[in-house]
Structure formats: C-alpha cells, structure tokens
Length: 340
Length: 248
Image 1: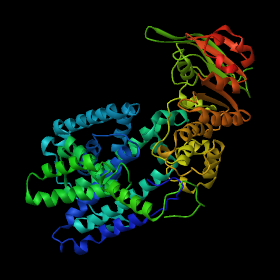
Image 2 (image 1 turned 90 degrees about the horizontal axis):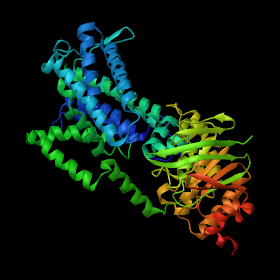
Image 3 (image 1 turned 90 degrees about the vertical axis):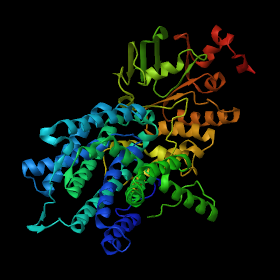
Image 4 (image 1 turned 180 degrees about the vertical axis):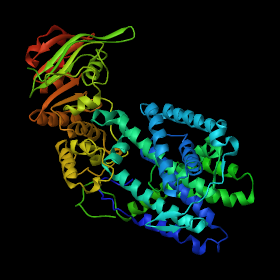
C-alpha cells in the first residue's frame, strides 16, 4: 500500500481504466461470446466486494456474514417498491438507510471484539437474518422470496430514463460504482482511513495514542453495511427478485473469496479484481461443468497456500522486484514531489 | 503539587496480589525512575498508571485531576503518553506513517473521511521532526519491520512522543539492547529529559542511576525505597542486589 506521503488524486489511472473498460463492454462483450447481464452483475459484485473490503482489507475486521446486508438491501428495495410504492431512487435510498441501521445495531454488539470472536459474531448475526428471511413468510415470501421487482425508470430533472434494458441499467450501476470507488478511495486516504489502518495493525497501540478504536470500528461497519445494502438493492433490480439465498452464508463466503483472491488485504483494487475473476469463473467454468465451485475452491486453496496476497499482491511483488532491479531502494525522505 | 500521583493502589489477579498499597508521585520537569527485580510488579504498576488495567483500590491523579479507571484513550488525550516494553508498532507502515497517526493534528481530524492526509505537508513536517528527535532522520520511508532492533526501540519512543505529551512513560526502554544501544538510548533520553517530564521503568540499574532525578524501588508489589540515586546507593536492598556493579 502506498505511503501516506503521497497525495491521493481524486481520480486515478486505475479507476479510469476500470471504468472505461466496463463502459466499453456493450461494444465488444457479445463479440467475445459473453453478454451484457454478466458485466452488470460483475459491476454490482464489485460494489459489494469493495464495501466488504473496507472491513476485511482496510480495517482487518473479518465480517463473514456480510451477505446479510446485501440481502437486506435486496429485500428492502423489493418491499419498498411493492408495499410502499417507492420509485427507483427512493427504493435504493431506503435500502441503504435500512442496512445502515441494521449495521449500526450489529456493530454496536461486535465492535469491542476482534479476530475470531468478531468473525463468529458476524456469522451469527448473518444467520439470524437469513433465518428471518426464510421464516417470515408474510413479509419476505419465505423460500420463494419476492418476485416481480421492477426496474422502474430513473426520474431526474423532470426526465424519465427507462432502465429496463440490461444496457441502460448497466450504465446506471456503473455510475454508482464510480461514486463508490471515488468515495472509498478518498476514505482510505483520509485521517479516518489511516486510523482504521492503524487499528488493523495494532488495536491496543491505536488506543494508547488516543484514538477511539470502538467508534472507528463501528463507523466502518455502518459504512460497509450501507454500501453492501446499495449493492443488494441493485442486485434485486438486476434479478428482478429477492430471495433468501442472497442472505445465505454462501453468499457471505463468496464475497470473502472474491476479496481474498483479488488481493484486498494488500490493495485497494483487490475486490474489483476479485469480483471480476469470480463472476467470470462462475460463468466460464460453469459453462463446462456443474461442479465449477469445486474447481474454484481448489483454485482458492492454491491461492491461499502459494499466493496469500492475491492477484494484486502478485502484481505488487512483481513491480517491487522490477524496481529493486533498476535502482536500490532508499529509505530517506525525498523532496516532496507530486506523484500519481 | 506533583504532576502525577498514585495513592494506595491495589491490584490483584485472582488470588495473587500484584500491587499492595503503592503510592508514587512524579514531579513536573523531572525524570523519575521505577525499578525493581523481575516480577516485582513494575509493569503491572505501569499498566495501572496508564489506564490499561483498573486498580482494585486507590487513586491516580494527573495534573491534579482524578483519572482513576479512565480508558487509555482518555488518558492519552490528557497528555500522558507511553511506550511499551514489547514493541507495539504499526509494522506494515513506514516509520513516518507510524508517527503520523499518532500526531494530535491527525487525531483531531480522525473523523474526516475526505481530507487527503497525503497533502497535509504540515503533518509530514511535524512527523519528520519527531523522527529526527529520536535519531531516525533519513529512515522516514523505511518500512517499520525493516528497521534494525535499536531503531525500532527508538521508533517506539517516537510514537509516544508524537502525541506531544506532558508526561512520558517509558516501559523498559533498554529491553533487548546491547551496551552500545543502551548508551545511545541514554543519550536520547538525556536530551528528552530537558524538554518534558519522564517516568521510566527499568531493571538496568546502571542506566537508571545515570539518568533519573528520583527513583522508587518496587519489590513484592510495594514501594520499598525512594530517593535520589545518591541516597539510594546506601539503601540495603539496593546494595544487596547486583548494584555493586555501579561503582566499578
């Protein structure tokens, strides 16, 4: 990870590359045998994985029940639309606020914990929510979930934009992904982000230099839950339904695997890379075999054994080796230069 | 009035009484020492004084204010900073990043999520200054885990200094240092002593006798002797222990 000494531009080159690449998918995706819905789903999972990595990668807080917030976002959007007649933006806003609220409640119970206890508590809370989703038939539709969620039009400045096609909805999600990317990038380079990083490394010392460890952890959880809720709401719109599976331990596990394979522990871009790899693997491997998850699981094991820092970690190591070859690394403070 | 005072501190873990009736006071502008054999309760005493453990009984006063039972965070914000015997650093970060998160100006903006710390050149200058004070100028960008042992000890003190404390507690700063490292550290602490009030726990008596204005000797969880280094040289306990080495 970059040193604090480097100013963080509002928008970076990797951001532009990622967003441009995604934005251009309608031009070439069909030509390579893929389809637009896939890019749409990848973008949504990127948002979810970024949210999750705020805790796992940046805060060292293992939340293994994050599917709950993704799922709550999906259900909240569906229910707000079907029961309260909420439009697109109001539905999404409601999904975000409700998950933030639930996140705030859960975080209040777990923020004094860390490590394995933290992880177990997040799983427990996640399972509670999943159980509620399955059993509370009258509200959640039980195992069938909520059907017939509509992609309502986007109403902006008196204009109505239909989002019914996968292309249109994809661009809507892309704009939100860009906002999440920019927002989280700012956050991790802010004093708050750096304190969170300090807490990840040494919670006790962070307290002894006067930081409010509990509150920082609580806030990070709320933000992460809220963004996961946004992703969940978008997912419900993409799938035009919400069902208990999105809340399951499975789904919680998927996002962890994405973040780790991509290299979220060492890089801001880990979750983005991971979401891309995971969904592509699901589709490409899934086309060959029903047991794709078995192969993906083996890949995951190999990764954890031989390349625990993920794809981004391998990339960083490769660059460090190249830099070391071109000039020996110095430890002194250089003249303050503007670097991207 | 003393800058820092502890009155009748008691602390027990289960059946074991670790601190019994400890009363200590440290004056502004002085370097005070706490010494005693291993297992005497020195570190527990330190942990009670700096808020890591709550005392079962007794009172801790800092600047005249009762801080008994307050959290480490609250105590740190009042201007009391401490280092650790077992190093407690932010190992994944560079030396200067370690210092930065401990600066009061970063702490005050800890809730800002949009301000770019990378552009805060005043904070960088301040952090570089702290590193220079502990003899780490030129090591700013070195990853913490690649610093030499003695440098890590210096950074440990730098991290405590970064908070701009009124009172600095150092827990066995010479732990693991060789003769040469200890000498360099003594020089550094001698320098700091002119700038702020310091309390040091140490079992290296030679080190402490060379630096401290006053020393309290703790044994079996009690203060068994107190005085200036000169006064303590005649103390029977001090004589009986391996302090004979002091005269050579």
